Amino acid sequence: NFDARLSERQQRVSAGFTEPYFYQREVSLGGNIYDDEFDYRESNYILDTKGFNISSYFSLSEFLKQGVSYTLENRDVRPDSGASASIVAEKGETVLSKISTSLNYNTIDNYMNPSEGFKSSTSASLAGVGGDKEYISFSNNTQYFYPYNDKQIIFGLSIDSGITLGLDEDILISDRFFLGGNKFKGFAPAGVGPRDKSNKDSLGGNYYYVGTAKATFGLGLPPELGVKGTLFSIIGSLSGIDKASVAYNDDFSPRLSTGVGISWQSPFGPISLSFTKAIVKESYDETEVFNFGMGTSF
Image (cartoon, rainbow, N blue to C red; front, side):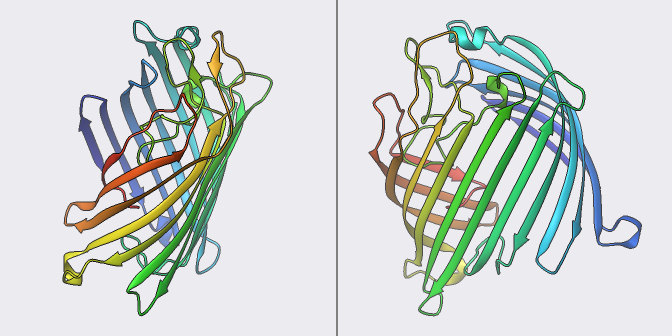
């Protein structure tokens, strides 16, 4: 595979190779090398990462797979002028060396357009096998789909969560989670969570959760067009900073949004449009009403 991206926010080049049946067994082995520069405008800094990873996946049963991977990456945090003093203090290069493992259980009937089934992925990472960073991180994504009235309506529930814990060191902004945008509709990208009181920069957090309940249904159009409507509600929060050199807002109170949307399984991948209202929020959160997503679904 080869991937090249060029936009106002991101410039990325990566290349990789995967052998899906290593030594004629149901074991995949692959690797990627990449150079990625991303502009975190909500935090006023650029993160430049260069590195590689190798990974392998193998089946434990019909629906259960395990994965293991190793990542070695050089990171360069480049604050913009006017960035939070907390981010400026983290300016410079660090090296990340981590090993990860995951368990993936999947009975969903269709990857692109699921109508029934259960899917859960749990992962754990350990950074500190060399490099400058030492932490452990856990994450989980679980989804459940239930069809009603001969699949005229599809009910869906999902929960996404993560936590990163430093091993006798603080978690830097390049290893924190950010929440908002496609991951939490109704809030702007990085619109939820800790924020510098003076310049409103998003500082990220060490732990988060997002839960979504939705109902997907047809709009009276021919099914082969792949156009559907969605009603949804989302609850979640983001919090936790080990140390900051500035005064900041931080509250792990739940945020809540609800909205309506249209999704289209286009020939170019999933496309979604939604109008969302943030019902419960903190005064310092950044919200948005309209959301456009390409390559993602509800």
